[in-house]
Length: 229
Ligand SMILES: Nc1ncnc2c1ncn2[C@@H]1O[C@H](COP(=O)(O)OP(=O)(O)OP(=O)(O)O)[C@@H](O)[C@H]1O
Image (cartoon, rainbow, N blue to C red; front, side, top):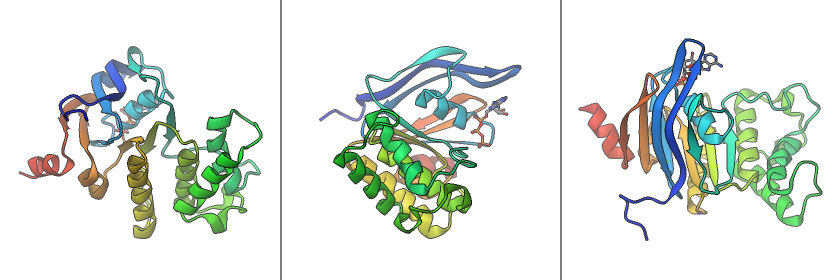
């Protein structure tokens, strides 16, 4: 057991700065993402949330600073992935791409990988859509397929950009349940979200304003109460 004040780090950001021309998206962000916990990144539009998630996911190099992974494998589910939009991929193919993170691209799938794919399809309630072309799915169905892809990877850290935004209540609940299950299996989850239920469930809430961490709390609920005062 580790006391809450000394979390075991899954990822650590050190003085991360990201600039896009004259725009400073992240301005020296330091952050410890605790292993096995749910961290939710909040803040206004343009605060730098997606950029921070991308840097934590290893999908974007910081202009300066660095991210330590402590050996954690990472699975990133972007907000609007262009995965297979115009390719003849079925939903099952899209989820299989996630499993290739375990095997290596285009490798023969082992029984455990097939089980991970089936499990991800079932958890996101898209078994019936498995043979459909990904490109014809609705926005919400795509989001569930992409989250299933992220789950099939079986990574140590799952990084999700707005996993419940724009979904109907039932789909949003499925995605929140998937997040809770990942935490139960010992994974670390980092979400960018405005979803009050996800924020309330978080172990750690990080608020960004203009590319800086302005608040960081260990209790999502107490954090929200503080903000409401
Ligand atoms: N590829 C890019 N090129 C130029 N500027 C960018 C790029 N990506 C992000 N930015 C800028 O960096 C800043 C932070 O953007 P980011 O998308 O990280 O914010 P966000 O908090 O996720 O916003 P939202 O809630 O609207 O998704 C914004 O000013 C944005 O315009």
